[in-house]
Amino acid sequence: METTINGKRVVLRDVLLAKDAWPIMDIARHAAKGDIIRYEDEVESMRRVIESWDMPGDPADAASYDGLDLFREFGPLSNAVAQHLGSMLGQSKN
Image (cartoon, rainbow, N blue to C red):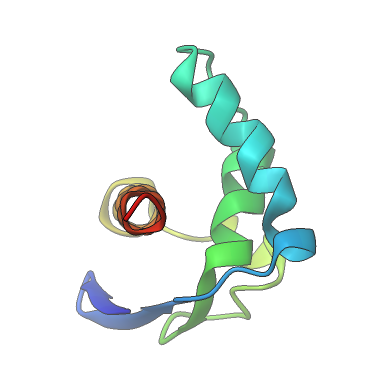
C-alpha cells in the first residue's frame, strides 16, 4: 500500500512474514490493553511494516526514525501503520 506523509511517498508492506512480524503481535496486545507503548517498540513495529519511503535514511533502520518530526512525520507514520495493520487483520478474518 502506498500513502503520502508530509508530502513524501511511503510504501507499507502488503505481506508480513510471520517470523519477521511476530514482535508486532506482542506490541499490539499491549496497545489493546491500553498500555503505553515505548518509543522503541513503536519504531520496531514501523520498521517492520514500512517497506520504503522518500524520507532520509532506511526505514528498516531504527535510527532513521530518531530525526523525524514528531507531529508531521513520526505521528502520521505511526497512525498509517496502525491503520494498515488493522486493515490487514480485518482482511484475515474474511
